[in-house]
Figure (cartoon, rainbow, N blue to C red):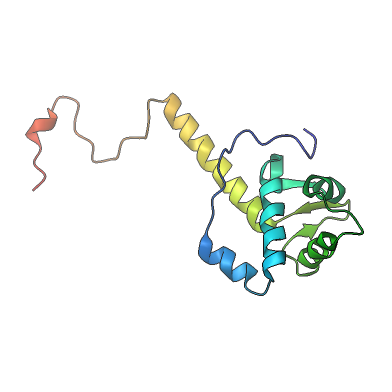
Length: 135
């Protein structure tokens, strides 16, 4: 898989408003908008990581535009990280992606087995459900 392979396993992005507000409290509205846009682009690819140049192209950030400064500010503040080989990522998003994939895989396997695993206090197979009281 290339660094820009489409992430087709996760159609949604988990979002924790409190954590997001804490991380972005020191940003201007313009910086916060760039951060949200970058995270949206990164979420769409496998591993939530892509080359910085590719991210700039997808965000339409050119060197002579003010948006370039916004993106550099996010990198300077460590909200976005850049690896030595030039790949950019948000470490919180990478962690959220890995956890979501792990849960999705567990759910997929449980679905193959017929659904959610039964709890240990399940009814014996010879006892009808109507015989059990909720009281």
